[in-house]
Length: 337
Image 1 (cartoon, helix red, strand yellow):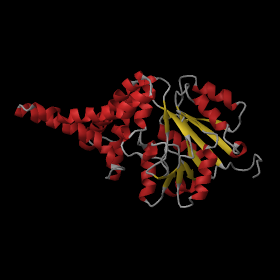
Image 2 (cartoon, one colour):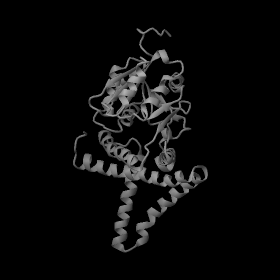
Image 3 (tube, helix red, strand yellow):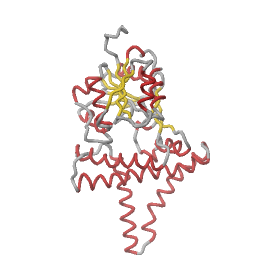
Image 4 (cartoon, rainbow, N blue to C red):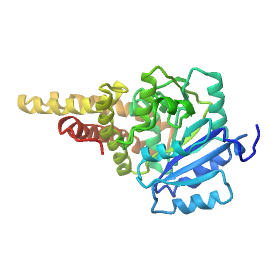
């Protein structure tokens, strides 16, 4: 390949960013270390007018690495950042990556090889490897990689290889966006899920392989995790409303479970039958304990103690967000904003 500056890059990397001073530096450095791609990639950091040191860090690294470009996102929000990046992208392939992550030195070359090996797919990536920087985050990372935490979300299991509903850090063929349009800017969250659902509904395929390794750093406190998954649940209803069908039925399980628990509690009160009200919570608690036992054996005690908390926060926050979303989008019929 010719590395002359007048040749379009092979791959454009788009990173939406806002107030990511704790992560953006390590993220960019990991991308600059990508094997065999230094002269054939551009890194477009689309920043939502960060108020912390993110922009200073990006400028500092880009001064010595001209393939990094900082682009303003005056709308602040992620879907706008993604679409701004796509409009500026010049590559034959477009990678949508996250600032909260680090990437193996062969992540992008592996993804390009996967596209060569699977010419029938529109998108490739790797199942996400969740990591934490403190005890609670480490427990959350374990929950996010377990069936008790995320159900059958194949893209969350580090060893999974095959077709999936989405890739967390996808590499697309450029023509996918030319054919199916851009990200839905009315979806503040879950716009990536919705885009992959949109293309797979039209017969396209997503393939992920553990050969493509990346690490995602999860939220570091119960409150941060609650806010994150509350918004995932809330905006899931907007996606459901748009397509009139779920991306995956597992996404309805938390809200159905908690509604059933509340219904049984009401019936237990009316019928004065305590067993009826506590049966499901007991079963749920026992299942969580069963999944926690191996954590006690393999991990530090405090991580094991935090694991049930992380699972509960994941499920409860998603259910509360989903319930609020149903009221907002389905009952009050408010527009996405």
